[in-house]
Length: 96
Image 1: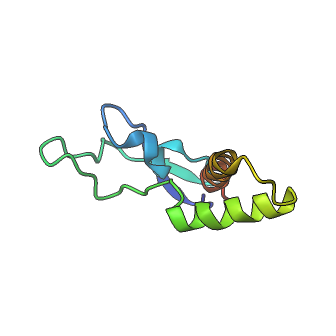
Image 2: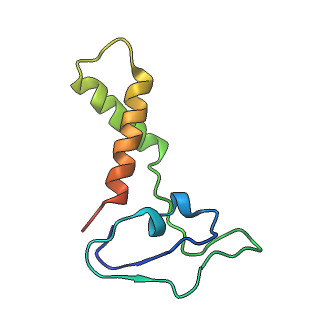
């Protein structure tokens, strides 16, 4: 997370579980929205920041992990899920 960020309390927002403004950890100054920026009518939020790594990032990191483990013949899904989880944790705890 950047040092200075506006965080969100989440409230009744249906997007909060994957929004970096809710899931992330801010290191340094942070502020919170005065009211929930989620629009119930359109089911959108103009301040939404997706915290999930994209598929290409997961693929490349899973391949890296697989190579570091000696290229085993089994466990491809394990490497995929491990890569996805590690990248997600990195994104949520990122600091400049």
